[in-house]
Length: 466
Image 1 (cartoon, one colour):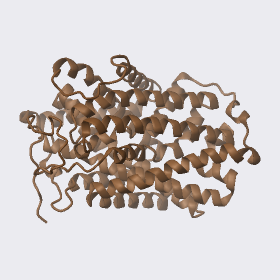
Image 2 (image 1 turned 30 degrees about the vertical axis):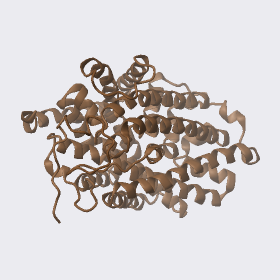
Image 3 (image 1 turned 90 degrees about the vertical axis):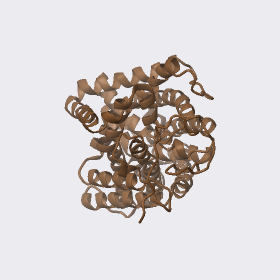
Image 4 (image 1 turned 135 degrees about the horizontal axis):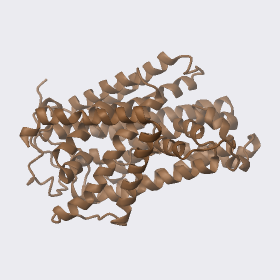
């Protein structure tokens, strides 16, 4: 198979950096094939994956009070929306493949951009793919009446196979991957709406009561525990920025990117709040804390075994859709890095027939499969959040710097609420990182040590090129 070499993305005078909306495929570039609603579906599809179906148990364990738990979900949504309202400005101004990577490069320089890409390689994406795939495997077994805890190896093997299949689909083309995400996105969005409405309409006939929403266990709740619970919530909300990784493949990016990010984020906040209220209406919080597969247990209470099978099928669709969307978007970071001279050029090879960054996709898949076979769900998700959200904050903070240093950049969308809204997002991320360092120091310190290990690699291999 003959490889198509990439061209230099660093050519700042290119029409792509000036904001072209042309769909013409330039040599080594990726075609713009994603419209507004495909992009919205990608945001929703990547985000609604595993967190809303798996994280509530861990959150309820840390915060055994339903009102406080719902308040934290609202807080996580507000933080995410501040990030979406802010990042939309950079997405419209710099509609490049790699998204956040490009914003960090332009705002803070090549070292910051490299550290993000390095973290995506060794920490972020593999842990994300693993966390999503774990839920797919567990709910698949639950739909078959098999206990995923007792059949741990089988569950994880199925998870690894799901990652491999998602990689194959996305190598075949962004349109195929986006089509799968689009169809599955609306299916799982509808499934969550059905779950919530069923709970509200017939839940009272099956033990649901408003008192579940107001009665906690009475156990003391520490501020640190609330911060750690917020980390799990941010895992569920993560995905709002992943569309930016595929910016180079979005049609009319100056208009569609900010719209898609903001519309998708608002839709996610609404459906997440409805779903959590439904969980807590049907189940007392102590039961939620014990339920690893809370959606299945909620439907079991409402519809019996048939409900478990139905919701398990929808969760499988949901998690695979998120897995597929994440596989579509994230390898574009590696592609952009290599294309920019900040990574090994082999990673930037474009498939001669399918016009996708197939080497980057294969790399992400292999690492994800390795981690899904070796780490717990909680370890995968916590590592992911602590590794990527500080880069989100750094990317949002680049708005201030670029407005001062690059006033000539086209800004068809300007961050709503600037300068307050971006500041809220940055401060919130700093606060939960500090909380994690104080209350969960060893894993948090290990995560940041691995991120910083990329600095000598950058200076040894790539700094001379820049």
